[in-house]
Image 1 (cartoon, rainbow, N blue to C red):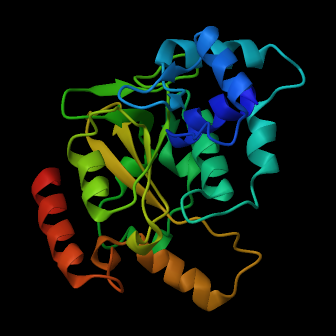
Image 2 (tube, rainbow, N blue to C red):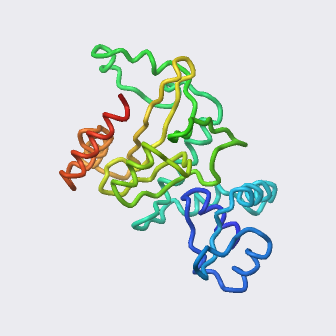
Length: 245
């Protein structure tokens, strides 16, 4: 139960202990893994030091594995959590534990090369967490937060992650109406410029061509929120363009 709670908190940035029996919750508090939430009787697991300590311990145990947990849940989806997206976020973090050339990780369309300069795709990029205060590199043993993912439930929360990110989440899982399924930042080691990556998660062997085409469109900014809310769309374009410039 502790492994499931810690892993879920680490990947998604939130975990409810309500489904765990009260004696177990009390034990988690007793040993420092959880705490009583201020002003309520609820217990929460959100202490970074204890989460990292638990993750380190679990890595040494053969019968506990975050990767196995993600594989187990890869087909489990709900309105607020998607097992496939979580698995890909973890996979992206593993790939970029050391700087990588983008064209060694992603396949770029060659016909775009004649329209614009894509020389940057050959450069080395590192995975970073971006907040208003600073930009921090992510490696296997370091990071600015005990949780790598943030589940946004509204457009305002997506914008907050892009512009402020006060809790230092590496990945953002936007609401389904947004379009892309995962957002994260990469930093070019040569120029130090930031690249906001928008990912659409599809098992391309299991969906039809129309679904793939629509999925590709959703990762283009003009399509963000396009079919859901014109008001959010206009706000998003204005704030995103202002921020990136």
